Structures are given as structure tokens and as C-alpha cells.
Length: 68
Image 1 (cartoon, rainbow, N blue to C red):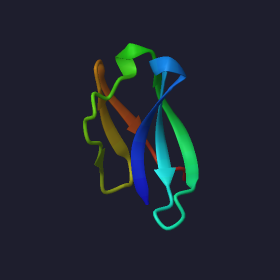
Image 2: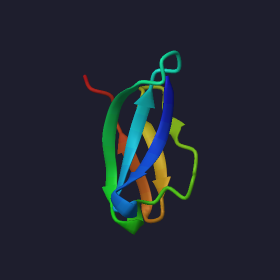
Image 3: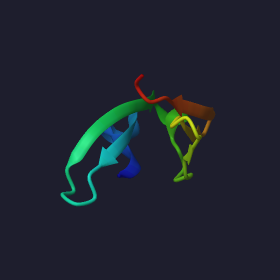
Image 4: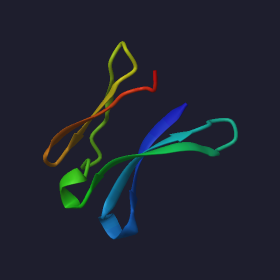
């Protein structure tokens, strides 16, 4: 999988996007935050052993946890 952050709606929304590397198809989008405070400043996210993604933003961290 390829994970990246997508800025949408003129920089007002930020989504974690999961992409299939073989097809380039977007498999999912998860909202990280709204507004300029959710800007990731191109920082790399970190996956924890349990599959949780920690993504830095201008105002702190966002945790994206896998579905049970």
C-alpha cells in the first residue's frame, strides 16, 4: 500500500489516502482534519506496531487507528 496525505477543498480539508500501488486506485480516504491547523507540512507519518498511524500536523499529532 501507498499512504499519502491529500489536501482538498482549497486547503480546508486534509485526508489520509490509501492507494493500491499496482493499479493506482484510491482504496480509502480518512479525514485527518479541517483548516490550516491540520496541515501536515509534508511531515512523514509513523506507523506503530498495532497499525496506528501517527501523523504530525501544525497543531500536534493525529492518530488514525485501524478498524477492529
